[in-house]
Image (cartoon, rainbow, N blue to C red; front, top):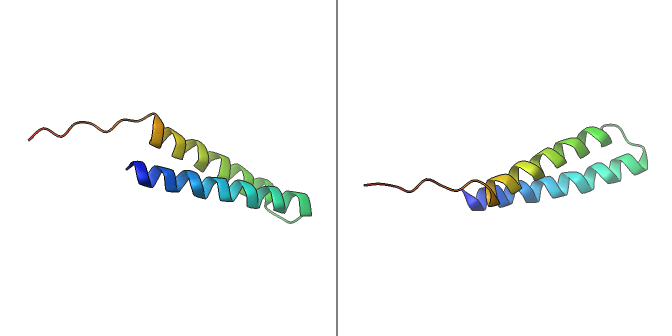
Length: 58
């Protein structure tokens, strides 16, 4: 789960970068892409560093 959360955070970082580039160049959906990237980044970081998996009891 931690690896998946880090992947989500990495996708969020890429979306933030793409959103900034789209916003600066005046393309459509730059702000939307930026917002989605921020949400993914926050969710990924929460999943990777805040949430702890429950111990498995046999």
